[in-house]
Image 1: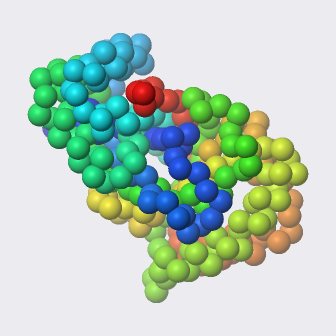
Image 2 (image 1 turned 135 degrees about the vertical axis):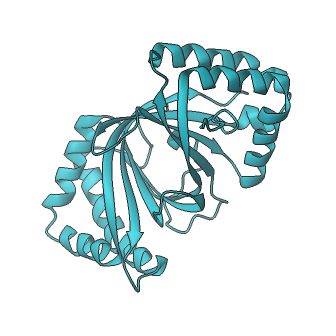
Length: 256
């Protein structure tokens, strides 16, 4: 059964409202994610054409929420990922997500876009999530359009709560900041919490780097800090995580 992916046009990171506190003052962004495989005989070239068609139809939907959406794809580089890509859409709030979803489902332009996507991708919806910025290097990433993503999907250990992850984050953050600054490898780190989720995971973390070399150098600098083992141990006590590495690319930016 095909999931209606264009109703959320699936991110992500460069459109976020950045802040350096784990308790962000701004309302969190809302992400809807889809795990997708290409229809037999289809490939990225077909998806690019479909995205171009979506871009040509956005103004016809006459929806401010559609124009504010930002869509990103993640393609797996390392890890156990049984999908060709993850498609994510960033909305500035749950209300905006609802308005965008309605516009895509209820307009002839939106329905035409959905039909095009159904010809190219078959997707499973993994849910709706809020984004919380945990750390962002001063100045941000070098580009808003392409980056490398570390993704950690986590289940809380028995008896543990989100407060235990907060304690681990408080220990980790200054060490990570010091490491990325010394290695000159800018990074942005988010925690995602599910609003609706079918994955079985309680939370996830996303770390964005400029490129693979930055990812490697930043992680090496962090692990060279002897105190980093303390933060790692706190995270392990709080939850169990699965990780993967992706390349990320913005495919449908916001429309001014």
